Image (cartoon, rainbow, N blue to C red; front, side):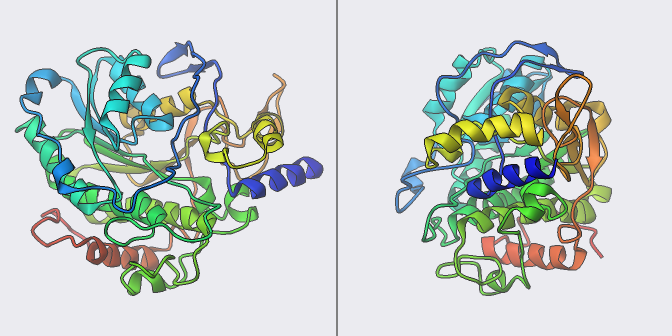
Length: 418
């Protein structure tokens, strides 16, 4: 077991961490037996390449879609960010196929979203793609305005913040349109602004839920987060205190480190959930949660790695660590968090098949279990002490409000934080 753990850690360290993708046939207690097709294109869930100097121009603003209420009907309205590939796409497809949800696919490339929705056999009339560039606060505000024009008077029921970028090999930081380091800007600040701009509207919905995708890499009480260098560490939020904008590239004010930037952003994501719960759950009734979908190891995320690694890593995640999960099952897990009646508890970090705090142990069926991989039942996982640091979380929230320029008028009116 120790040798297996050592080998797995070598591979995980080479990767920086182990999120993402694959293709397996699974049985879900919520959605039943699912047939899984083999994808021909590696997903782009956590990475963007060759980003232009500016991500969004006002002239690119979409013409607002209208009369959405007629399309939505009696279904619940859900927004999924990053819905054109990987985890987000499979979550969107799962929700659309239930017949209970109308999905807004919030993504950078609307034409791509239309194409992949057809490829995933998402039913006609069950979704609409809308442009959202999380690396631009102007785009986030334009998206919110377009969404409100589309849905008219009916409130948004669910929001899933899934989109992310991961740039572990970049020696220098890239920057968002607003001057944030790209990883933190997209993963945290973009979603932070989006959630806050939609809270008032969601407070009018019945059984509303917000889920922000987390990661074991941001939790130091897991193998991937505690034993794989570098560890997430927000320090004293020195970078945020300086405004979090160029030339400041890290939340702790230290020099840029791409792999750590991703982990730090995930800590901010999970802290945001805790703060949303503390400030708004009691007064709005909105359920706020985070989740870890499992290690989706076959992904475009690792395209810069050598061929031997790209072949070996998924194998080790499947048969040594037990953390591997296919993208279809991962998408169903994310969908479950907002669709399953049993997931109506706020301030929960949901996981499956163990807490990923150890490598998997071989079970009677010949598979390693207990490391967050395929199969298993959903449960309330435990976050690390650092993620649950209430004082740092509150300070992170206040500094994030200032960084993204949220005005008092834009903030939810039912904040009951002490």
